[in-house]
Length: 116
Image 1 (cartoon, helix red, strand yellow):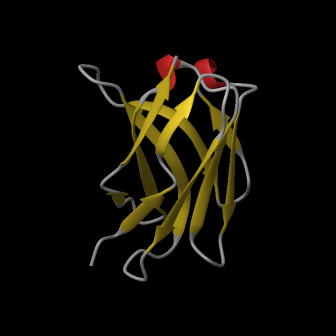
Image 2 (cartoon, one colour):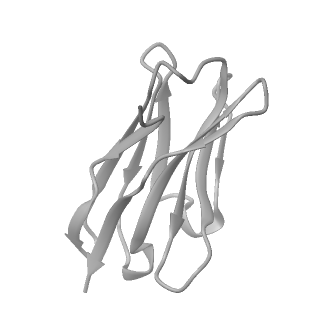
Image 3 (tube, one colour):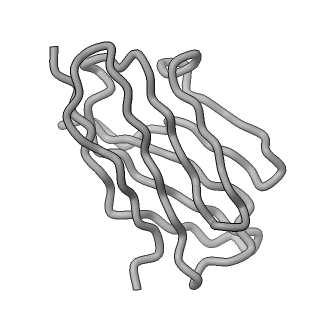
């Protein structure tokens, strides 16, 4: 069973919007934090945004004011609303969870391509 499944990636033009979704399987419980990371071609994976079970949010500087993270604890889902997309937002976006027990899980990723 895949622990995390992302959806919503695709091809979008500069200035466009996309919403990513991620659902955690039943094998993951006591989630303390969910988030999104991305990896551009030839680059290392980097933080995009996280949200804690208490609703605290953290954004990477490049996406502040353009991306919004939200979550639904009951459904074990996390979303990433991405607006005003730029070519440098292109990459594979990965969903991540961290549990109170210290376990980390990753999804397989969803590709976002922003064309100019």
